[in-house]
Length: 402
Ligand SMILES: *[C@@H]1O[C@H](CO)[C@@H](O)[C@H](O)[C@H]1NC(C)=O
Image (cartoon, rainbow, N blue to C red; front, side, top):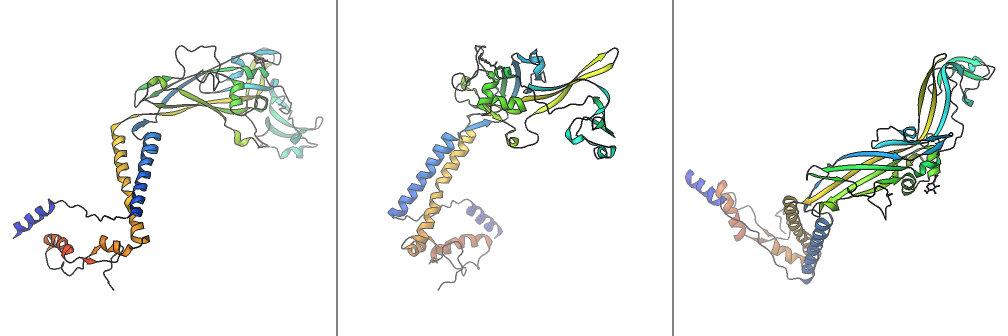
């Protein structure tokens, strides 16, 4: 008896079930069905496969190295400025500054002196008490008012800096050139590329239209392409982003894998601010004299801060994404049925009739009698014999027929 049951289970398992279809000869539903199918096919072929290149694997983790070199001479404070004077830091990395304006405070020594600035005026010592512990001045406040000059006293590098003076910017910086060497590697495909070919004319200057692969950029051109004027950014300082983008398709020859450049002002959002406009920093040069000890020249430098950023990805044909997306496309074509069913069973004349053809209902009277395994096959049987007309939408049949 038990053996027969097991055998029954096995034969039940090795069966194939296929869905029974209802063919609806309706021009309206038929054409909606074909139209929706067509839309889905067009979407997959046009957008997913051709535009988004779903048949490729992509490598987004590119490795990149950047080297920069600035060239040019300027005149500032009756001196000729070369690269060692105006580029900070000197290492030639992807982040560097070109100093365009300086406020210099010379011959500073350690000592006590008045703090410059309207904010620090005083007539007696109590006026200076509120500044004690302040970080905003050039030294540590002593709490003393130097009545002969009417300014609070600080201890530190003296004389203190007066950065309200207006100085000229270095006009020649507009003609400085920046050479950018960028190599990238796509580790997934093992491809290495450089941003210029070996036979490049080294006297070229980048131009987005006539010379888009030249790696030498004029500062003035970069600012123009970032929609900035040289005179404002040279006076106040600012941050400029140089973006190098690599979007490569390795289904085509590797030589076609070339960079594209774009330029933006990175600190644009602070353009309307009244405080902390532009970009500046301070540094000092130190000297020692045998008689007077250490002294220094303090520089407040306004600079154009460049940041070279590299991004990109590469794609190449691969079987696995192709298969996955083809299967997704075929499956999605079936979505047309869902839409057509909704129309057919709800909005069309004769919807009741279609429903009756599509859904057959069976009551559970015949099911209870048999044991598990057989009851399954039995219930399929009863479905066929005791099939009743259903007026339900099929999703929830409650079995309460009027
Ligand atoms: C920049 O170079 C051009 C052409 O070489 C020259 O006419 C111009 O005067 C230069 N600008 C500055 C500020 O030196």
